[in-house]
Amino acid sequence: MDPVNALIVTATAWLAQDPDPETRAELRLLLQQAQDREPAAVADLHSRFDERLAFGTAGLRGEIAAGSNRMNRVLVSQAAAGLAAFLLKQVETVRPGGIPSVVIGFDGRRNSHVFATDTASVMAGAGVRAILLPRLLPTPVLAFAVRHLGASAGVMVTASHNPPNDNGYKVYLGDANDGSQIVSPDDVAIATEIQRVADTLLVSDLPRAAYETAPESVVQAYVDATAGIATRPRAQVNAVYTALHGVGWDTTRRVLDAAGFALPTLVDAQIAPDSAFPTVAFPNPEEPGAMDLAFETAREVGAELIIANDPDADRLAIAIPDADAPEGYRRLSGNEVGAILGWRAAELAQNAPGDGGPDGTLACSIVSTPALKAVADAYGLNFADTLTGFKWVSRAPGLLFGFEEALGYLVNPGTVRDKDGISAAVALLSLVSDLKADGSTLAEHLDAFAEKFGYFASGQISVRVTDLSEIDRVMARLRQSPPAMVGGSTVDHIDDLSAGFNGLPASDVLRIVLADGSRVMVRPSGTEPKLKVYLDTSCAVGTLAERTETASTALADLERGMRALIG
Image 1 (cartoon, rainbow, N blue to C red):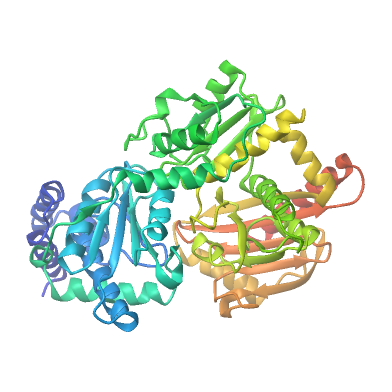
Image 2: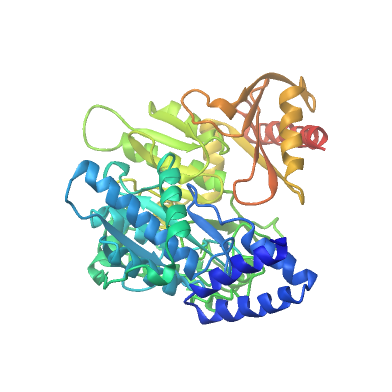
């Protein structure tokens, strides 16, 4: 068959089972144009149907549109049926005759609610007990609900801080997985079931059934558990809060109120959920400009602290007053916030009742600052470094606290086994309240950290490519001709994680350790066409100013050296 005709047949078959009027109309028009051999339409169909949106440890994520390589109701229904089949097989091995259960959450993005209800009805039709959360809610509430309800699995419909027209599908597993996100080999097993559904069944023929709606008491249980990690405020903090057009505020408000904190001043234009994200170019607090309205509001009220959640509230950004910053405020890096929250966790462990001393594990991803290990060593705690992603951080044995540099923090592992921007905000606000009561500030606390553990400087190089093979070539070159120097520093050794390393699963990562103790991590991005390089240096001798100068100078030299190496 002519390749274009074959493509048209594939797309027509997809159209026949699509229940969504919007994507049906979109695909019907595209098919008409392709039948007339319009080049742009044919290319668009190839982009949509030559591949299938891959299901992996991050679940699904992509642009909302018709086609097997996009997010839509056909793909979501197939994913739901495949996940249901996986859960039904799993339960037969552990509880023959048992009925697995799934709890489903959704945020305020375009189509989140319809994707969630499709998932619930398809999974109920397959024989799984399906429980839909009562309304749009943050991702951490769903992660909490998996454990709170004793569910076999959880599904969160969200694309976190992706562009407005994206959506996604995160999967958590209960039972032995304790509510963490899926990891291999479960992702492969689920993907196999999804493919089987896609190959053998029409979405229009999938049985659907009534599902349950979780009571509001589930949300209240999350509020109570999260408020419970706070210390009673000894001083109120003049804070500003933004939800970046996401779903974080309502739950955050309830948690802060329950914990006894005065409510912050709101960035009104960004507080209500809005799937168009009208005031930001990209709804990620790490992106330039995303926090401009928060800075403006903070200047108006003289805020001591800015708190920002990303749209599904699993990440937290913090900014503090800084007279040297153009906006008057400086956003702290994820490494800075992770280090001080890790210090807080170590202090809490040391002061916990009992005479056995502090016990437990501080964990972070391998691309996050080594500062957390310095904290663990100082307090006699275990330390674990994991592959990137909270699916790995959350599984560290004896976890007290975990984080990764991309603004993700896990401060309450007893209730949520994923990053949680709301509980992290509460923990940070408790710390700032105590500091204020003692006549100190978060900026001074960061200096105290550097004086106690050393000054840690971190940087990142991100190289976007149009051809993914460029990344492969750089990684191959670094492996085949490993550098002896990076900038002015001698390379001590290079760890290649491609075959696994020291208990870490295999990953396309190179860790370059320098003779002066500095470190460079090189890896392809897991979500974007980018090569990412993470740079870390530190200094623990001299005055604070000397430590800062030494580490910062070394960091700049590392960056120059790595830019020269990767081209």
